[in-house]
Length: 244
Ligand code: PGA
Image (cartoon, rainbow, N blue to C red; front, side, top):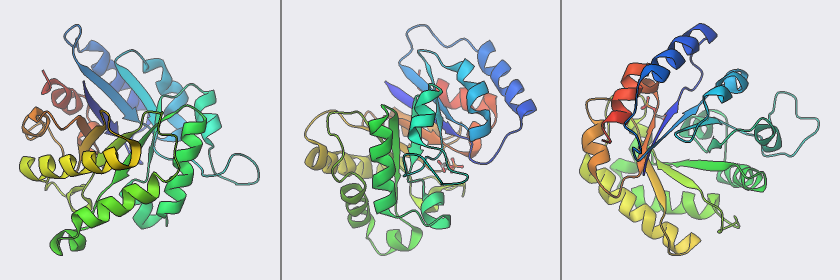
């Protein structure tokens, strides 16, 4: 199974979403195709988008509060996301870590809240360009994983997305070889932290219709987290189709 998850970030209008949904509905994926689609949608459109949920399409949020409920103006709890029937939630995206002060401790708390509410967390990790240049990638990923996953319920499914910060929104995807090597490493780390089993690890960072087939061909890559290219239904479908 390959997961193709779109991350719309702070983009799209209601009108654009109608067109996107129409285009997606028109497309006939091959029956029994081994692909699971997902869209991480801005909060205000989540309820409307939940109409798109199916055995092949997950709808989720891009963020969640690390608190349960109460006087946290502007926040949305995991319980609320579960209450409206969502499937998953991104957590620890590098934009949230860099721009909104999201520490590993907060990421860990958010993950816990998602698990408590039976939502599938998609945990994003990745190194900055400076860390990459200094050869610190593995140390950074290993530290993020051990802190973010500390004390979580090992029996519940999580998805990890490896997103090198230098590849996000830059048009400069990591090479297929580097992705393979790094995801292999991440799966070994997950074996240590969560126990030996099948782990789902996606790649994210400038995935587009031109490079998706090469990235997804590798058995170790369980899918892609797609930002910019997921805003256009045709490009999103082309990326998903490169799985077949
Ligand atoms: P991008 O974003 O595909 O636009 O590089 C990926 C992400 O931030 O999840």
